[in-house]
Image 1 (cartoon, rainbow, N blue to C red):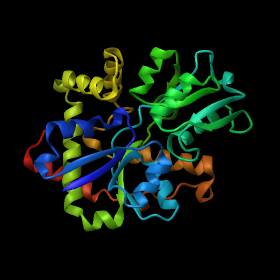
Image 2 (image 1 turned 135 degrees about the horizontal axis):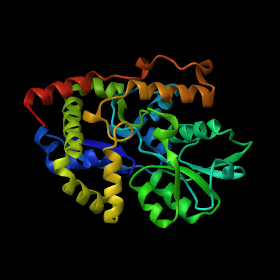
Image 3 (image 1 turned 180 degrees about the horizontal axis):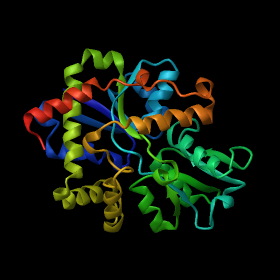
Length: 307
């Protein structure tokens, strides 16, 4: 069966690429068509319109879809984002961001809200102390920050957080250091589709978890570095930095692609605070989740004895 999977072109997708290369999907009768999205607005609209079956991105996008009335569910975790607040070389500290522009994908979801929260924690408020400019997903956003001196800061994750260092940008700190646990990339689907294709989704998630385990197995380091270099056109140093970031406990890939409930509580609390939603009080997380497919997938591969 063909599954269309829509992603941002970042290293968060290494488990997906590794699972494809290792044949985990094929062994379960699945063919994967990977689609790269230019930005989260297009991804959310595409999923709602049925242009693809599965999205992998910051799960706050699924929250935004649900709040807009779409019947969507988050079905597994992935990673904590590995984001860093990257800035241009002339920025020495947070105070230097006053009067500058923050580069974002979509201004009211995910990493944009995380960046705004970090800046708020350093007494910087949007429209009062800095402005926001749309610059696309992580890859285009990273390129825009290198090319446009007006874009002083932006949340950037691997591999681009390493490649832009080679082009003069630097970090004011990781999202994990600045905000703590955060549920970033995960998979989400439309609930009617998952209900009609429960077995297919279980098999997809089983192969994806196998891919996550494959990437995180230190024995596969050389192969994963080669995969990073090949797919993202990285230097060996950038690939090594990216892979190390992916294995960093707490801020990198989640073992077995598990969903972080603590991290998701952070996602909801940031949205409540920064967007003033739900009267400023984060709602119960369960309304956005259906982890039953993930649980059955993990049970399946453990029964099979998969590594």
